[in-house]
Length: 152
Image (cartoon, rainbow, N blue to C red; front, side, top):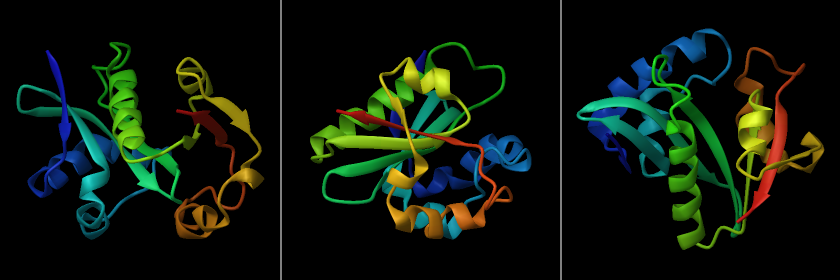
């Protein structure tokens, strides 16, 4: 059974192991231990027993806008609804904190559309998003990710 829970500082090394294959493929940005620790309150884990099988983060950009980022489900656990469970947990938490809109940059358009997200031009994203995160990506400035947004 999958349990969704908040991440703890002691989870960072295991989280980095889960995401490593996607970082190596250039699908997800590398996050240092320091960066993950600074943002640890943003992460929701999907755990099977004590093993982390996926996670995602809700990063706040304004008083009512948040970004879903760093979403990953471990190979072998995909296709079981775990990613959707993580997104639901993140959106529920965001809503409780006053988030009205959530966006994401992703290669997984159909997945996010199945959750009610709609594509928007990347130019509609907060400008600081590009300079804070995107500039670190090996694909920058030729980005082929899709921006999607959802009102919650």
